[in-house]
Length: 166
Image (tube, rainbow, N blue to C red; front, side, top):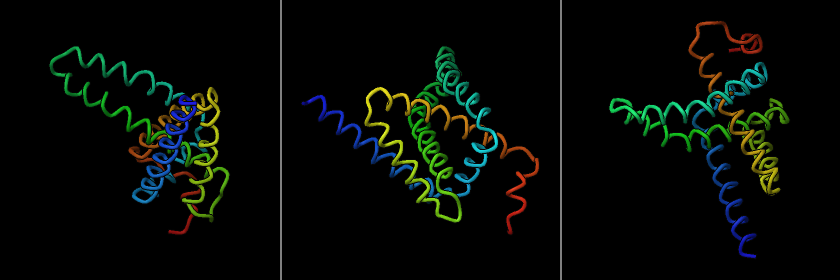
């Protein structure tokens, strides 16, 4: 019984904190959420590949940086940033999945809540929940990484962004 109670407390904390983080990110960066959705929609497989690369290589590079005196502060900073980065990546996937189900003109918050509800339910299933969290985090890392990469290039926005009245 104590094991189940501990799991329930952990699930509740994870669900509540991902809800709060996702809503906060939508409040402070709504256009970044839209860019993440466009990236996931137009480049899902490249997002998966980028997410796997980031998920595997970033901790390795951080540990390698720890081996040098010059890289020590950078390695420590990157290792400390992995947990918040993973949380942001996870809620990004919740947003993307929710937006795929709840199309505009319905609001961003409703779309996020749909994705959040799906993944919160998945987290209740012991093995499936861990797998869903891992896949969501890796995919979110890729979506964020590719969206950031595309935002720095001077290329034209996707056709749907050009057609929108400004």
